[in-house]
Length: 304
Image (cartoon, rainbow, N blue to C red; front, side, top):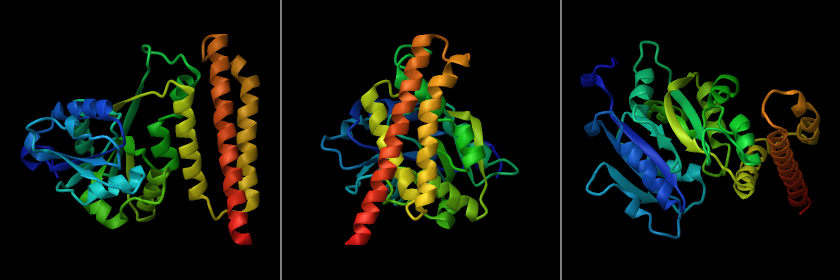
């Protein structure tokens, strides 16, 4: 394919959402503002069993935007429901709390239309902080390092966070949909299935979505529990020794940070260093607890 407008592919954007009317409205406003030809893309919003009516977030009088409902809880089940409504040659995934930049679709599609086109693109995810350009709270400081390093995800771990993943209908036909039983880690699972099928995923620094950080401890806790459960589900069959090795790694990371952080140039102040270390320790504790709980639950299930 070439990148001339006459040859541009059609695109369907899939946006899962749960109880987030205002952020969804903001996200859809940014999709309206895309500089990709309006007649060549549509948007499927998937309401993942919200208790409130999210339809008012849809841009009025814009038939490109539709909403469907998926009652099975989980963002991957919601994304799969969106896949059933796809009309485009290209499928772009983002989240309801994201703010795609105006050239997001155009730049992502350009990678898929290049002479040596990959099978999928993981675009950059830029964190936006609550009180300005810099992180200040412990959760923000933690997320600024560990939250959405999409380049690292793509180039080291061979998956892309679905806050900014763009691929084609043909590739999804080959690789299949997401694992709808996973509450977290479905992007990891899909990325590895893509790689096993011989597909290539590349990082696209110029295809950017902005993502608000999680500034509070409750938000960090909710995300960390969900991610830890996803990590445990992906490694459900591994040995006790492997589980123990991962738990010890988390304990080491959560304790040694209190010694190593003081010799680092960032964060810049003692208070921020302490808040970052506290957040890292808290996440490590959550991961250890979830991993241990999963192991106990499996033993209990085997005993019955």
